[in-house]
Picture 1 (cartoon, rainbow, N blue to C red):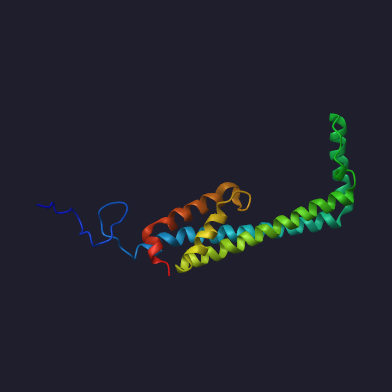
Picture 2 (cartoon, rainbow, N blue to C red; picture 1 turned 60 degrees about the horizontal axis):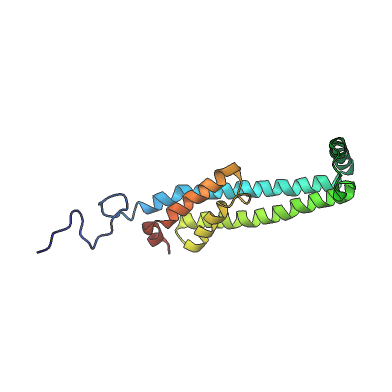
Length: 172
């Protein structure tokens, strides 16, 4: 003798939150908001990358500013009895180091932002599950994503949404 199951039959998919049958029309709605926020984070990251490029250009083209900045830093080192690092004794070398760091970080940030942007767009379209997940993962990496933790929170939120079985099933 068998006991009949409660709620919908075994052949109907169930929602994770209860015994209600799964409504496939609901999945696109739960994907849209985190996808839109991924796109916003990506655009902010692109803007910050442009700022880094601008900052590198300003530092490399303004030797008087760099020299006055180094003079202040070197005075602090001398007053504390600490030896001034070699690259901070020459304004040209210091400017080259700072601008190169800005350019490299801008390049890394813009690549990560483009992948996040494409992932968010593909997430809205419910296509390319792997790209959407990759964009969400990149957005959740600290120091690659912006917003002082906001990018990480949005990336984790998108990962959680993408991990749902009903959402995976909606992707083509």
